[in-house]
Length: 328
Length: 298
Image 1 (tube, rainbow over the protein chains, first blue to last red):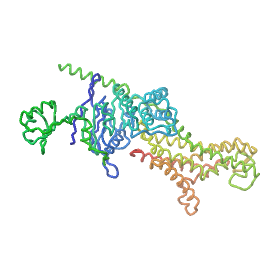
Image 2 (image 1 turned 120 degrees about the vertical axis):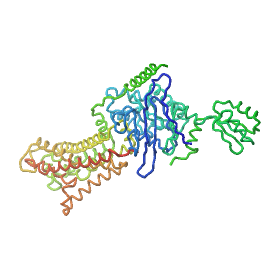
Image 3 (image 1 turned 45 degrees about the vertical axis):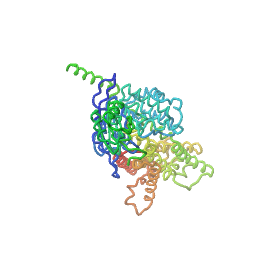
Image 4 (image 1 turned 180 degrees about the vertical axis):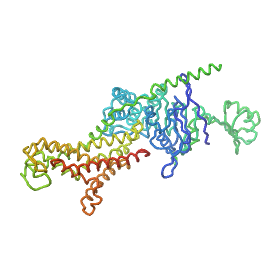
C-alpha cells in the first residue's frame, strides 16, 4: 500500500510559523556503479523545527540518502536543498550549521575522546579556537562522557563511541542535526537519554532528521515520519497523518456478508470490504458497541466481532513488509 | 481573522524564523593553521612514524660508532674517508645510506596513509561533513607529508653532524672541490643538502598522496608507493634505459653532491628541483581530480 501523503509543515505550540523546509529533495536518485539503484526518485521534505523520523528496514536507502544530503556521495539525479541552500554546491557554507552522525561513530583509535573532538573542532573553520576547550567540555558533558574524556577511543564501549559521535555533532550550535541510527548500541537507559537530548534540542528550535530501522525507538520524539522501502519513499507526513493510514478496523464474521457490509456503509464506515465470511471496515470515529448493536438490529447474524486498534508500527510493517528481510 | 491579521501573522512567522536562523547562520570562516597543526600532531604522534624517525636517526649513530671502532678507512661508500678528518661528513654518509630505501619507505608510510587511513577508519566522512573542503584537506595532507619529508632528512643530517663532531675532529677539510672550508661552511651546505633530499622525497610523497586517494586500504597504498620508488631506482640503474631515466622520480636524488662543489654546480640541482616540483604538481593534480568527485562511502 504505497501512500505518499503530502508533507505538512510542523506547527507545535510556541514555535514561530515555519517557512519552507529545512531539508528538501526532488527526484533524488543514486545509482551505484554496479547498476544498483539505492535511492530512487526520493522527494524528502523535512519541515523547519520538526523532528523527522526517517524509517526503513536495513538497506532501504536511508544511509545513502544521508550521505547524499551531506555531500559525501554525488547524486545520480535530483536536487537537494539543505537549510535553503543548494547541495553540494554550497557545502562549505551550509554544513557548518549541520551536525551529523553518519553510519555509526568513527574516530582515531589512539586518541582520547577529547583529542578526537579537538581534531574535528580544529577542522571547522567557523569554530572559535578561544572557546574550543569550553565547547568540547560542554559537548562531552551533554552526552555524559566527561569521566571518559581522557580515555583512548580504543577502550570505549559501543555506547560510549555513539555518545562521542553525538558530542561531535553538538560542538557548535546547529540549525539541523542529521542523526543516522543514534541509539544503535546504546542500552535502554542510554536510549532514553538520547531521546531526552533530542527532545531538548528540538525545543530549542533545532530541526532533527533521525533515521532508524526501529519505529519504537523514535516514535515518541518524532513530529513527522518518512518511510523508505527499497529506495523509495512509501509514506511521508506528520505522525497524525501516518496514523490515520491505519485507523482502527472492525472485523465482522457473519454468514450474511452483503447485509453486514450494507449496514456498515449506512453507519458511515469507510473502506468497507466483504470477503468470504467476513466484512472489514475502518472504524473511524464510530463506537464499536454501536456498530455491533446496529448490525444486530439490522438482522445480521453476527458470529464474530473484533476491533483491531491502530499502531504506527502496523503502518510501518504494512508499508515495508514484515520480518527481518533486508531490502535488496 | 481579518486579512491584516493574516499578513501580520505571516510577517511575524517569517521574522521569527529569520531571527532563529540568524543565531548560527552564515558564520564567519577563519583562515587558520589549526587543521594543519592537528594533522602534524597526528603524523608525528603516530607510533609507527616515530619509530621510522628513530630508525633513521639510528643510522648515523651506527655508522659513526662502527667507524670509530674500526679506525680510519680509505675504503667504503661515498664520504666515508672524509669523516675521520671532519666529523660533519658523517651526515652526508648517513644521507647516502638512508636514501635508497629507509627514507622513501618512511615517506611512503606517511603519504600512503594520508587519505586512505582516514577513509578506512571512517574519520574521512566526519572530516568532510565538518565541513573540510576536499581541496583544503588535500593541501593540508600534502603539507604535512612535505613537512615529514623535510623533518626526516634534517633529522638524519642533524644527528649525523652531531654524532660525527662528537666522535671525530672538526678539522679543516675540503668539499668535493679542492678549496679548504670551515666546519661552519660544511654545516651550511649540509642544511642545503637535507632540504634538497627532502624535496626529492616530497615527490615520492605526491605519488603516495595519489595512491592514497585511489584506495581505502592504507597498507596497499604504502606498499604501492614504496614499490614505485624502489622500481624507479632499479630502472635508473639499468644503463640501457637511459632514455627514460631523466623522468624517473629517483634520478636526481644523488645530485646533491653538486651542493658540495665550490662554487655550487647548479644545473643538475635545478633539474632535480624542477623534476620534484613537476612530480608534486602532476600527482597532486591527479589526486585532486580523483578525490574531488569521489564517492566517500567508507
